[in-house]
Image (cartoon, rainbow, N blue to C red):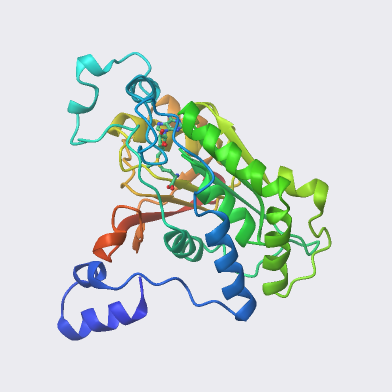
Length: 317
Ligand SMILES: C[S@@+](CC[C@H](N)C(=O)[O-])C[C@H]1O[C@@H](n2cnc3c(N)ncnc32)[C@H](O)[C@@H]1O
């Protein structure tokens, strides 16, 4: 959390958490003029004017609105395949919004999360190349995935998976447009320049397209073994889904360094369970919290809580 917030909280003798929601949402400072230009380019490239929602109810629908049928499909597929809406899928825990509900991180919020996750560090691998793989589980219209790749030379590959076919289609359309009109290559090169890096494998026409992978499907079937940084916009996910996500991460996330989730992740007692023997990494049990701007908090001028978890190898524990 912001140092100024901690100091103010100490002076007022209140926990930092009490003040954090009132702190204005600011992106981390750009390192130079080129990075300011880069951010403007990314914002205009992802402004969303290219695509319409596929909803049957006409052109006035918000960009990522989906039909009732598709919402039902997403809600029933989201980690709970045998349950239907009629059986009261989301009445079982405190969730009032189903997984099909849409809201997304803003481009400013994305910069905050990149900073908190350590993706803006100038770290490069032993061969002077970018080294991170950023994954977004439930990637919606794909903007976060695309922004992370365009803006962060530290990221070698960005991967998203989205269950809703129409949102996935918008994501693919957005990325394809950017590749075809040359913006993707131009912006990624600007990012490399603004970071002052001369990459051994500087990006070219052929490599740019493969830097972003957008999959359509259920996040539980995605291979996350290469992910170093994982983001889960989990606010609308049920408790059962979150339990399964924790199991998946601890079983498969062998390259992970950090996980960001909008909801606290549940840790069930796994002593003696099957999960314990298949566990290869361990999510830290004491996440730290930050506030990040989302589409639904922007008008209020504040942020949404994000919990950040470190990941350690089981053998190192
Ligand atoms: C709140 S949106 C977040 C979009 C984007 N990640 C962001 O933060 O800007 C969450 C997305 O998760 C998708 N989703 C829900 N269950 C899913 C599942 N089991 N597999 C993949 N995507 C899922 C929803 O369709 C929705 O588009």
